[in-house]
Length: 200
Image (cartoon, rainbow, N blue to C red; front, top):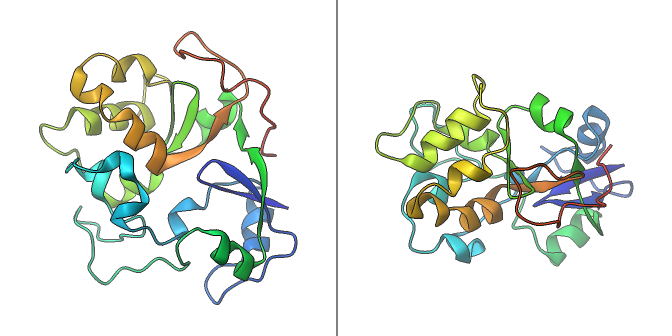
């Protein structure tokens, strides 16, 4: 039984469910699914986002305010994702990256690929249901990962169009990592996604 956290596959067979999170049920629902957004994150959790003020770089992962602003009372159901937390929850990092194929990426709301990395922007799109004016990164996220996407799920070339969007890639990859592709496509620039185990 496995679940994904920040792109890594975790064994939850000996997990200790909390009052609000049942790892067994989540794994049975979809083995390997990304649960990163259930963990508390601080501003220091993503150094690559330091200095960026756009919503994609600053949102609270468990925000629930449908107006597009973070709710000050929203709380993630799990503590920060670190060794102490994982030990307390009885979940173990297998040291394998979660792998996806294109059919899986295409079928999941909010997912897209940048340079071979699979990103889960579902929590972002749910928190910010409307387009954010004058934000080219937000525009790419909506056009590729949004429910009405007609461009396919590989956003690599779109992010390399301008310096502003290129500068967002590392932050996006760190904040929203869900895994890697098991096969390369023409839009990707390196071979890091080859040979990864599928998450199912």
